[in-house]
Amino acid sequence: EVKTINLKNRLFFEMKIPFRELGGVPPSDGSQWYMNLYWSRPRNGKHMGYAWAGRGKYHDTSRFGILEFSGETPTSRRK
Image 1 (tube, one colour):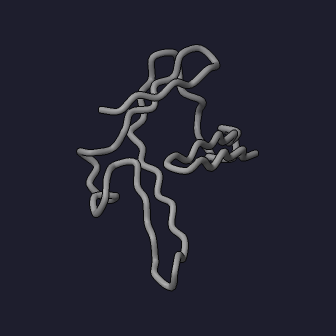
Image 2 (cartoon, helix red, strand yellow):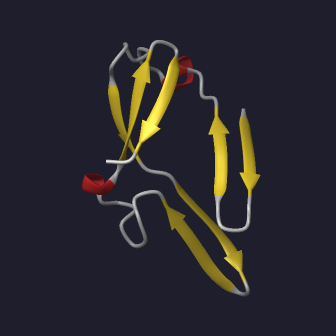
């Protein structure tokens, strides 16, 4: 399930991915996962890409955000 809100200078989205689909064990309380999100689209005949970790750095794991799990509700904060 995905929900998106596209504003003038911001993009918000929510994803629901069942842990069973990932083939692993659900994270325990306090577990942290490093993650990055990348979005791309054509615009005015050019490729536009956006990454949470920053422009041109979408593959640099030292710049990834941290997804921290607390009970059943995940929260996120930038490193």
